[in-house]
Amino acid sequence: MTWGRLPIFVWSILAASIISLTATQVVAFGLLMVVLERVGGMVFFNAAAGGKPILYEHIFWFYSHPAVYIMILPGLGIMLETLSHFARKPVFAYKLVVGAFMSIVVFSFVVWAHHLFTSGMEQFLHMPFMIITELISIPTGIVFLSALGTLWMGKLWLRTPMLFAMGVVFNFLIGGLTGIFLADVATDINLQDTYFVVAHFHYTMMGGEVFLIFGALYYWFPKVTGRMFNEALGKLHFWWMFIA
Image (cartoon, rainbow, N blue to C red; front, side, top):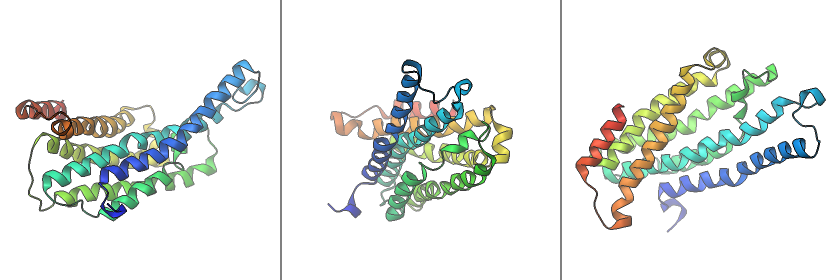
C-alpha cells in the first residue's frame, strides 16, 4: 500500500482529522475566555468594560467554519468511494482530489469572516475574505467534477448506496452554487436572515452530509454484518428522502 493507492475515503478522513485536531483547540480557548470573564473578572467580550463582543464571533467562527468541513470531507470521500465502486471505474483525477482535500484543509482556516459581513466587521476586511471564500470553491469544484468524471462512461450499478451518492451529486451542486452567492459581500448582506441561507445550509448538510451517512450505512452494512439489506426498502428510503 502506497500513498497513491490509499482509498479516497482514507484521504478525506485524514483531511478532516487535521482540521479537527487543530481547529477544536480554538473553540476550547473561546470557552475558557468566557469562563475567565464570568468567574475570574477578566474582560474580553464585555463592551461596557472595554472588551469587544465581536471578538467572540471571530473566535467562534474560526472554529465553526472549519467544523463544516470536518463534517463534509469524510462525506465527500464516501461519495467518491461509492461512485467508484458502483460505476466500476477508478476515482477520476484521484491525485487532484487528494490535492483538493488538502487545499480545503488550508482554506478552511482563512474564510471564517464571511460569517461576519453583517456583524460590524471592519470594511477593509470584506474584500480579502470574499476572495478567499470564492477560492475555496475551486477545490470543492474539483471534487464535484471528479464525481461526474467517475460516473462518465461507467457501467453504473444503481443499487441503494449508489442512489444516495448520486443524490448527493445533485444536492451538493445546489448547495455549492448557493454558497457562491453568500460568499459575495453585496448579495450576502441582502440575503442574511433569509431562507436562502437556510436552503444553502440544508442542501449542503442534509442533502450532502446526511445522505452520505445513509449511503455509507447501506454501502458497508453487508461487509460489517455479513447480512444483506432489503434492496426494495432501501430504494424506497432513498426516493422518500430525496423527494421530501
